[in-house]
Length: 114
Image 1: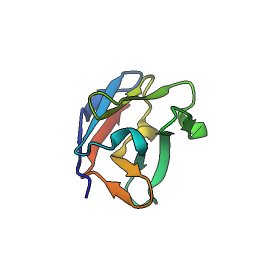
Image 2: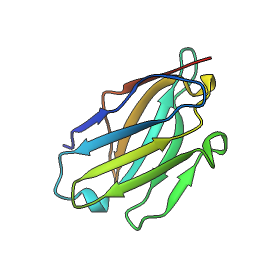
Image 3: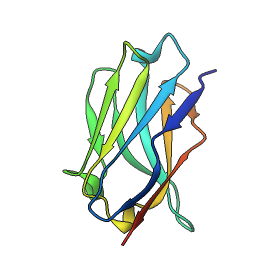
């Protein structure tokens, strides 16, 4: 069982920045593909960005050039740097850890005001 704890969400104006962090409770952190998903009201959960165990990153088209995912295997932590935020980025953001089973964090709210 892997526990994931997100932090860093909040309220920001259009064009602002936030940095989300996710701490994982596993000594095998480096073996997991880590991801950030988001879910807006009335919409399905969608992948925002992921980083594999080898460091390969993947981004949703809507966030390319604005968001950056990174991982720190020494601290069992994954970050999501979000710049140039838009109201459409408003959602609950969830951290995930995937190897064979997928684990989820409890989510952190990001609200971008216009």
